Length: 195
Ligand code: SF4
Image (cartoon, rainbow, N blue to C red; front, side, top):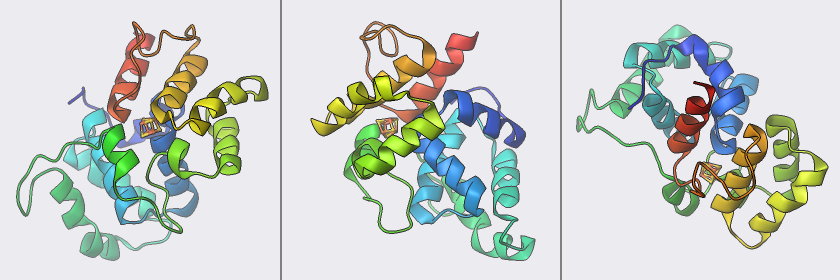
């Protein structure tokens, strides 16, 4: 797991360093003050590995839900599950964050759910909108990304977006031609580029 990160840092980190799957969950959470179960799991476990401690995670989720939920309701409905993600209750397991493979092949999102991999699970129109609005992908570069999506090379599409948003030459990927296999790896490499 990474260095310590506070709840207040997440908005800034999301904009600069999160892959589209996590950025989409973050934007939805901010817009709706809500995420459904699989979204909370996918995003919560990712944030744990980004470096959010249990105290900061509770602060983050309590505040994120506060637009639509009382503190009492939050404590009753969400405290346990967040502690569970951190292995502090129940089976006390140290749950890993989901890899791209897991996100791509399990728990396909249903209606009103925003987890999953946007490259795989969004319609082409929704994906284009998300890439433009959240990642700033130009129409010139869009076809390059979409051509990988159309051939079901979702990791390649995500890696191309990483290159485009970090000014990295095509084919370099995360470094030495490595493609994206884990959302936390994407975030970690992106943060390292800043150092
Ligand atoms: Fe997230 Fe992986 Fe899909 Fe990229 S390829 S959006 S990191 S699940």
